[in-house]
Image (tube, rainbow, N blue to C red):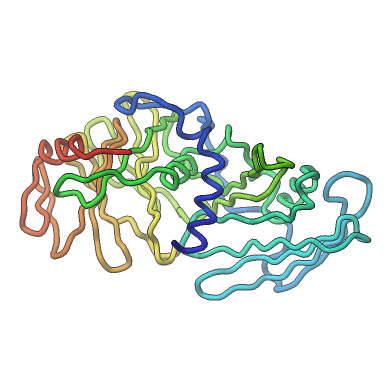
Length: 331
């Protein structure tokens, strides 16, 4: 398992109790831990470190204790990863603390480790978040948006046993918010260790680079539901209830700057999403009402037809796809 994946799994495991509470998976559920209010339209981070210069520095009171803190930052990166390396002295006479925000360009999520000295200084952590990302992007688990909720749950949930034609099936918990789809803001969540591991203070930052979604584009109308896509995600709007939900976000992307979501179609109550794996294509079939989904590899091609889909020359009806999802076991 790659190091980046292990680090993300370790951080999402700390959040599991707030995400995977028991519920009836056959009905739409709005989680108590998700903010249903529309997200701010400004999705990029708004930190105060100038990113148009390779190096910068400053002196300011980051934690409000009356003493100036000194920081120096430099950008390091290449074609596959990059980030800011921050050296902080708090106060200026103290030994330096190092924070490395380097992340891969193929993932929405990144874990930024905090030095042990931060565990007893939560206000300094907030000041560092303000410096690096912008204080308005700091979230508690109770106010993350639905797309970050979807990604965290995906990290924590293993794939289930699949019935043909599916190669893999999963189940997520549908989260519906009032109104029409809204782009998520980039977000930072502070993660603290829990007992019995003292001292229980801030240990890492979970960073969500949501600006990589781009803009919403109308994709398909399926009865009362309308789908809209971003570069890497699909959301549906229930026009009758005027509520919306994320139903899929790409997690296997070579470079986030290249779109991975293609055509979106409907077969009955199911959405069929063309997912580009940087060359190979698969179809992701999702039931927005139940949260059941499955992946179907495509070798030679596919064609949508009334009441079903033809994949590599084999026809599958809506009823067959629905039954295959039902027969597939989810963890």
